[in-house]
Length: 342
Image (cartoon, rainbow, N blue to C red; front, side):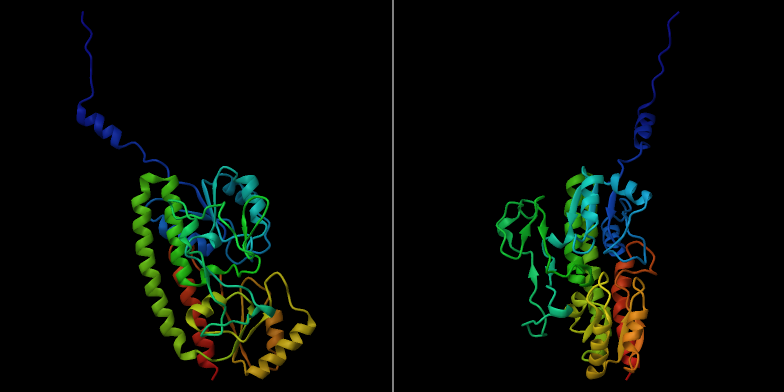
């Protein structure tokens, strides 16, 4: 008796093949929520990146929980601002994510860096009294992907450590607070993701282009919001906003602390009080990530109102919408306080 051979019809075989799951998206890990938001914009329709730092914590000093360390260990690519913002993260990336691609966004092509000045505010020479930008736009030392050649000549201010990493010790790490830098970060993320995930390269490219257009529109909206309150004196909790100030020509008169890792002592608080009175400060801005007591203490007797600026989006929902909401929130907080304190 002959055995009958049963074969799947061709259409059934094709349907079975089509039902197979698509290749998994890369495991993308970021340092802070604004960077996660930009990465999420690039990965829309492909996957979802995660952030190591939870909302509401300061990035300069943080101890990872086991779940966050495991997330880093599973990463295919890590997008982080750089050690100037999260000095504790460099060793963690090297030890836990040694096989992952590590991308320090302060080194991304097109990101314009601003230097810290004395006492948290620089002596600058351009039209707005601010530090000249140092954009990574020199094409002489980029590979075919537009990335810097690690063997390129470094000038006196760009030093390399023993691991071959570029240091920006005098440069402000709060690069994401300028939407123009946000566009450069989008482009770098798209390029790096396309390298490790070429199957989705077109999606990353399209998302980067759409995201860049959105950030241009965002900058135009912010410009309209802050224009009426330019020239009005205010102080911030710490020196974190020079990128926003530089882009939108609205400059603080000073900061209570030089950084969120260096709380002011009594002598500095006394000096800040005097400066607030001297400048006729209308507002002092506290932050969700920092103890507000010092800023409130500095504002006592100055007549300045106390309001909130949030550089990290502590109360915002993670995802693609966090970054534009964060930038617009800064503008609106400034406009509301400075406009209402006349």
